[in-house]
Image 1 (cartoon, rainbow, N blue to C red):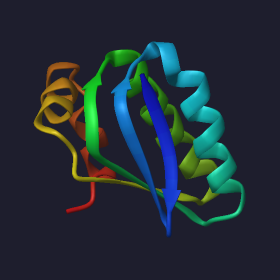
Image 2: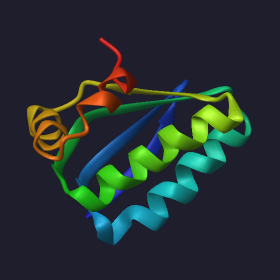
Image 3: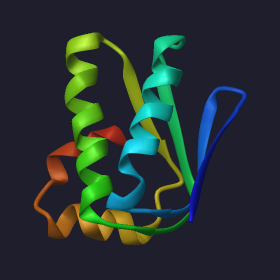
Image 4: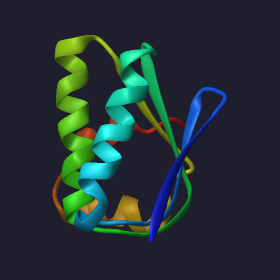
Length: 98
């Protein structure tokens, strides 16, 4: 189970972020980007994440270069950092805010 909510200028993701909810997440994120120059994703409530969801984040990242929109990840769980390292995608690490 997962959910997405917009609070002020940040999207909070709750629950499992997996391939099963990529389409829902993508639609939500793109709707936020339609009216904002940036997308801030807070991952503090994420309980699980898989490579399918990571691919969505990579896709958004590649799209940001074309659209000049900015995407920031906040409160990234250790599991996600490990997933990025294990997938050999450390060059996308600049996506994360501190």
